[in-house]
Image (cartoon, rainbow, N blue to C red):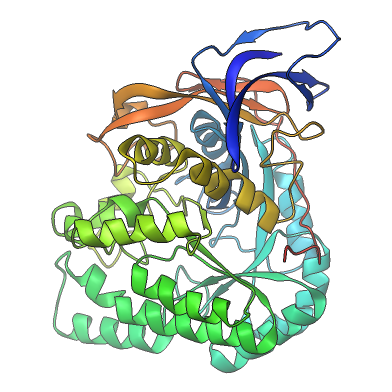
Length: 447
């Protein structure tokens, strides 16, 4: 039993004891059965474990950057109890590939996980069979990135039509291939190797064009589509227009698009090389992102956790070093800090981090909920805890954080996965292998 917490849901908060039996929540409040173990949560908030629906643990693949053991441990420390992972270096392209990955990960995760599969333009005829095997989503790139080929407009239309027929859910990386290729050619021909190439190469315009095309095709076909890592208000607004007109669209964003400034790349270079890049130019744009989150135009928050070590980030020119940044263990902390600052309500933060992604990917109410019958995936958080984020606190194999040096208020204290304590006070507990694979929802898509 967890005693004395304030339970927080997307709809409100209330004091209640949480009773757990056999890995599930059996009651809130009073319960006749005596507790074998009591956790004192006085002064703490109890929220559903975070459902981070977009992470890259590189396992198998580039596991020197991250693997499931370190990645899932970092997630647990950050208050996350469910992740959905896909790896570009070893993409899942077919049913057998998904089965091999599930088998590979059987003893490698501390927390429960779903898996994404990739859409290759020459494999569109196999999507229904792949979807039925259990990925949480099918990932599509509209530009060639990370060695993954672009799915261009004609193939994208066919992909959307197919997904609409079998009820699949698509996660789309939106950057226009022609625009990113043209900018790369111009910048390379000019001999540019300065850090300023990143926002010029991966431009706002490229993201907006691809987001607009994706949103329009979603409405035309009826496909269920998530726009991944949406980076700035104009892109959100383009998607919202089609959503208002009836498209089945959801908008994912990430903390880096609320907290990191575009200009930081000029000083930090490879440590701010991710795509889409940070876009914020001023406080006005940051405020606009928070308003869009509060209003639900940004439907949910993930991390796009794609770490590299310091050595890997410093192992070549800005063109050569890998994209991506770590984030899985800081997201809940950053959102609690935003609550403390008054930028978003606690209930909306819980909705965006926990309930909404669990509903979207078919895991609710087992995940993203503290209702009786749900898995006892619980994060106990201290809303008043003050600390400075430091690199030496990082559990991820990356060993650094883009938020190092930032003073924050609020953070996770204990994380429970199916009733088991898997992290406490910044350290993972237990052995990998506790986490189970969660097959995707198939056609059970929320409306």
